[in-house]
Structures are given as structure tokens and as C-alpha cells.
Picture 1 (cartoon, helix red, strand yellow):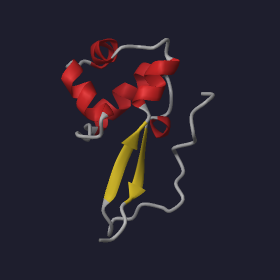
Picture 2 (tube, one colour; picture 1 turned 135 degrees about the vertical axis):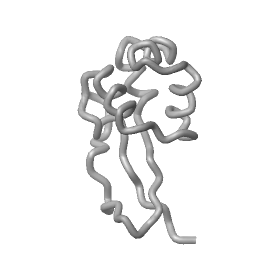
Picture 3 (spheres, rainbow, N blue to C red; picture 1 turned 180 degrees about the horizontal axis):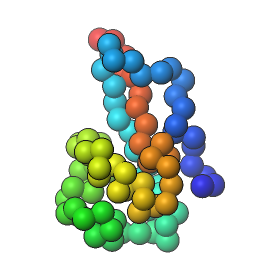
Length: 90
């Protein structure tokens, strides 16, 4: 999909020993899907609009099933929707 970064690769691999931050491109994907609304995405994935809002804002990590449903709604690989980024040690 044009205009989207390649989220399937990161500068550093996420490992089991470090905390990770899950990021997503849902807003960008909705924009490129004829400005799909959060409600439309919710209906396509079988969840509430509030769930989509929380996932899009990074306040809720979706189940694996929901993550795949979101990717299928946009007809893209899951790696174009979600990525993990290691957090910096504090």
C-alpha cells in the first residue's frame, strides 16, 4: 500500500526479555480505505466502535483474532497493521 511505512521490520528485533510497545497504522489504513470510519471498521471486525478507538489509540492491545480481523478488513498483511517496538530501559 502506497504511503505506508514497512512496519513488518524494525530497527531492532523485539525479544522476549524486553518490554515492547505495540504500534499500529489503523488510522492511516482507514484513511487510505476511502476514509473508513471507526464504526465501519468495528462492523467489519465484529467489535464495538469503542474497542476500535482504544486499539487505534494504543490503549488496548487486541487479541490475535481481532488483529487478524482488522488486517483482513483492509486486505493487508498483519505486519502492515501492527508492529512491535522495544521500549528504552528506564
